[in-house]
Length: 635
Ligand SMILES: Nc1ncnc2c1ncn2[C@@H]1O[C@H](COP(=O)(O)OP(=O)(O)OP(=O)(O)O)[C@@H](O)[C@H]1O
Image 1 (cartoon, protein in one colour):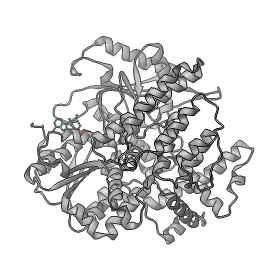
Image 2 (tube, rainbow, N blue to C red; image 1 turned 30 degrees about the horizontal axis):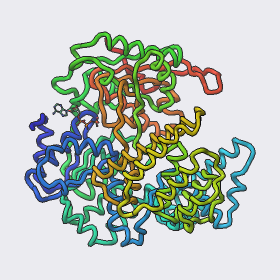
Image 3 (cartoon, rainbow, N blue to C red; image 1 turned 180 degrees about the horizontal axis):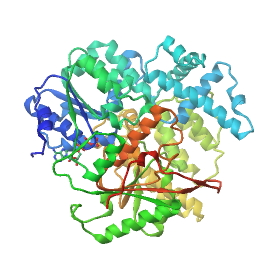
Image 4 (cartoon, rainbow, N blue to C red; image 1 turned 30 degrees about the vertical axis):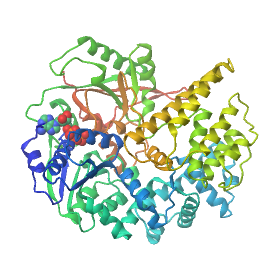
């Protein structure tokens, strides 16, 4: 297969193999194309040398794999995944060398990590429950925010690899944080849990302190690629560096500083632009030709980031339209009507093939902006779906929750957070403060306080989970058994609530089964623990049928493109977000707006309402977003 490459793109792909390369490329300049083509070239010339490709999202990893699908050769030495999943797999293999238990579990929910923190405070004699137990709801919120502030601090300490002195300096207004942090870490370890940041922190530690482990990987993978490298944070960058050590020099990083949108996660384009240059002395390239968008869109993007991109030789004129509406409903109606007109138009010289809903997307700064639009789309019978983020939805039926909690407990009996939740769901006494003693089958024999026609099924579910073989669980049998048990229960009651709960239980059981099938198909492992951790990292989300018009936040639209883009809610306070008050935050909002504009291939419709209804009923005047100051509608 031959792929079009510009002469500069080709030059990068053809660079001698072995050295480091940095590519800074603007939106639509073909970053992903250059990266995958270079991997293809290395794979064809150095058949035996493994390649590792690091991305930030599972979607990006899947897309890269798809583009490389036709590659010949040993696929065992092509390892494409998110930084987290690759680090996690190092932990699964070699966690023991730094004392990590084999059944460690990723605590992906904020709420679970918070529970661990609260317990560590209780153990330290702090009466945290009394502190949080206040009647005044505002005060309660404030106090919860204080606790959340600590949790954010812990993440920052890990991400930025702060030592004691640096912690004292950074958190000078909160001198207790260092001790709270150490207590939190001990409590996490006691429950065999690790949090997201720990995945990278621990993998980094393994590679740094055990050269022999790092050498095993380095013997296999000789070339490292990092996509969207503008989003690296410190620990992630250091992880890549530790992976390479002195032996791997062939490191290819590509990114666009104008699209750095994860500042809240400690990301900084400095790692791509400065640290990488300092540590690896790469050949450096800049790609500015935008192959994706029409002239009108490139002009609009350049109003935000002057001279960031050039039109490609073949760029069409395209169009950008700015429209305001009286209120949010008016804005939603305008979008719906325009969509209908476009569909009626059927074809246009600017668009290849028919104009369809699949060629369009509506983007907004946050998902709440879609409320009015969703209503109007439903009324007008226009099919749509909201693009989901990376993380799987939590179960909501009791059966689904028990399945999840039961499996967590089966893997890790020390997981007292799950035990507490499971007991509270079944309305039984928690066995002990710290859990870990009671087996699921014993819990199943308890007299549940939960009144439901399904309690017998819940008990047998726990027994069944308890009997699973940890190293090779028969999940298919579990799913089949309970699908038929649940289906047979439909005649037990006629109430709507019961039927709905039953339906949801079956759906959640089936999606659990689908995740297992995906886990096996992707060859992610055999054990129950690997299955759960893979699921925590969002690697097993089923490819849901996404029909009709896509609605997406800017963050979930990153890296994607559509012929026709609607960007709605472009008013001050919404975009930029009202919380962005300092210059660096405003700059990041501008990067987000830049990402939003540049998702469009042909036409961009930007809208904003002049008035907004607040949740308590009042209305508020809105003004046009500062990011539209220099935008002029084209016709
Ligand atoms: N040399 C080329 N000739 C024609 N089209 C190209 C060329 N290079 C890239 N493209 C097309 O331009 C679009 C953008 O490419 P790609 O997605 O690789 O860019 P990107 O730099 O990763 O974009 P972004 O960062 O904005 O998501 C794609 O539709 C791609 O097929």
